[in-house]
Image (cartoon, rainbow, N blue to C red; front, side, top):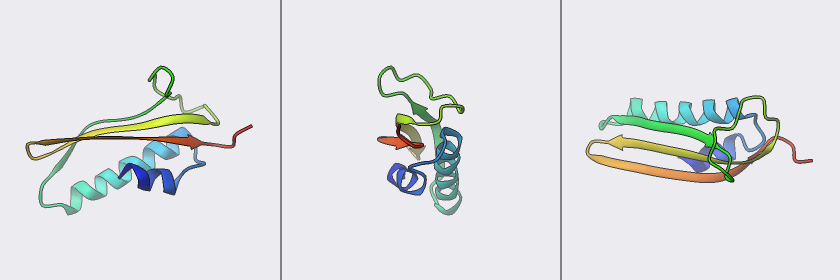
Length: 86
């Protein structure tokens, strides 16, 4: 879940946050009897919802995820801070 990503990598770089989220979702998809199909996973700027570039060292972000489990579409997002704040 998105909160697990925030707890796992709150100070990680954008690429690390994305990789951790994807790994958690991949693990959930592999162990569940109902396949989880990812629609999107995005780490975006909360001000304008543009994708956070991998070279950004710190800042506020929103991790947004949408996936399907059977006929149900799940949508979640969580605000988080990555990197060292200056």
